Amino acid sequence: MKLIWLFLVTIGSLCGAQSWGDDALDAVRKRGAFIWGADQEGGGPFVLPSPDDPTKLIGFEVELADLIALHLGVKAQFAQGQWDKLPDL
Image (cartoon, rainbow, N blue to C red; front, top):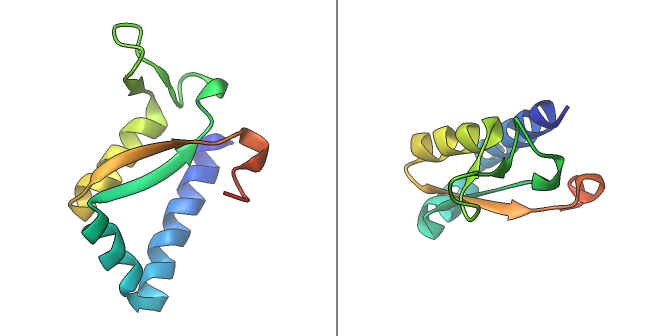
């Protein structure tokens, strides 16, 4: 379910950027970061702290966000959100 939510939010954001012109995409590129949110308390395989380095996140959603950011030419930046509050964030 988390994967579907991240996918829909990402696609919606990118489609929205096109419908607003390039302003939203330009803002992401100027900021140099694709900010994405998830609830890491839900754990693997989506978003969880690395066993080797708890300050680094690993998981499927992390990899997906990194690929989107790479495509946009920016860095991925994680923002923690409580699961039931993610739609509001």
